[in-house]
Image (tube, rainbow, N blue to C red):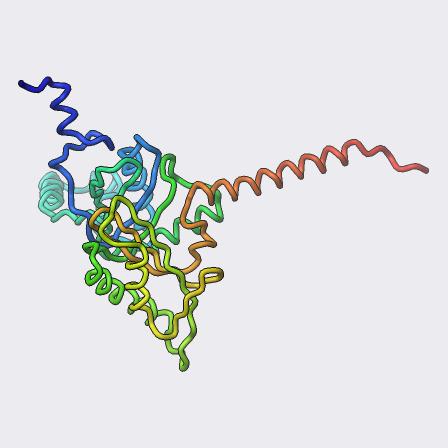
Length: 288
């Protein structure tokens, strides 16, 4: 019995958008996990591209500023050039190698879940912390469909030896920068924030115990008041890890929550100001 066109489309395409099953990419490397509105995964990818590129331009300017300035030459300068020079400039621009994209969408084939891979020199943790701090200050989320952003400094296959190796690499650079030139080791209170989705090979306790083995001796567990957070995202057969501070202060990188809190405070201040002004307007002249 042959398939109808409707059945064929259902077989070939996933439920999280128009991407065919054979076009998926492997999820790896540093990047950002994002949760979003169901059915708006494609729009979420687009708005995150725009957001991340604008932040990356400020944090990691692209080399070749002279070339960028040359492309924006004034009309008066172009009028002074002869035809052969203009043609030579156009040919040089065409032959110039394209810069590698710093952000690449990796298909998750899962509703509400998006992963954007980051290429060097982009640091996903610095990228998301900077954005969250901006949202906390301004109340502007700059996105419409994105809920929460989780950066990972690296990814690996979701098995205990690979997770152990990844944590060792990620933690070394963080604590080396945190200790700096201090003569004595500083005690760090940490908490492991683990989220497991579409994965049933490893247990939560097994993952947590393996990650705890990678922490330095001057780190102690504190579930109530930690100052260091280890973020672990296990999705299907992939595990991503990062380590950072201010995770709770920045509302677990939920940009909608940060924006709503800031806007609620501003609305309250404006309303209080109107009430006070109205009360002053209703006060009559003083008695003599």
